[in-house]
Image 1 (cartoon, each protein chain N blue to C red):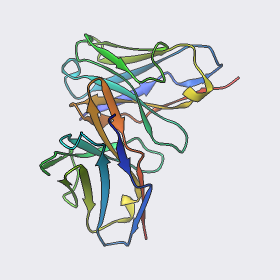
Image 2: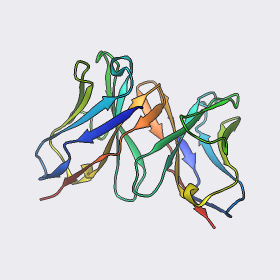
Image 3: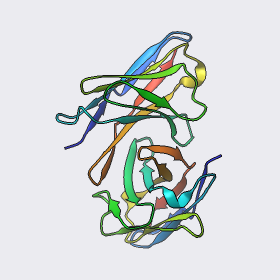
Image 4: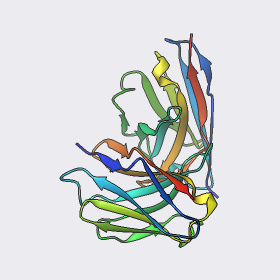
Length: 116
Length: 111
């Protein structure tokens, strides 16, 4: 069965960096675009970034453009999100999701807290 | 601009049916959407996609109590024979050129 497991979250000070990972299994990872989506406490879902199945295209939400970088390693079935210049408003649960092209499988999320 | 609009809340009684609505912004009424369910303290789960012609495809393991339909720019999720575990947040989602969009979510209370 499809499994997506996020890791790498934690508490970080404003201006610092963090890298999230998402380990995928149960499907042909290299055939699917993958997304990062976040959810702030008590709020809705916000799309963060997408990467094409082969890494050829990457798109970002306006709030993270220029600060976050999405990447993937198809040999390791792993998706990444490099987050730089973190701000308090980046505090959220971060989910990875498989695209088909609608987001049909999601991980359980990893918490990122940006605080002094 | 691609926007999805949902009512913030809905409620229905145990065993009854409820119909949730997701409205696409003007000019986007031919877009397909996905319905997602998020139970408390869990990640979202894909329920189904709903096309502009009303056809829908449920995700793996989603019971047929959940169904989808369309009318113009509106996409619907109908849940019949409501159960307590259906109490959750429901989101719709779609995509356009270089952008993926979520509705604000509807909190469903099962009375």
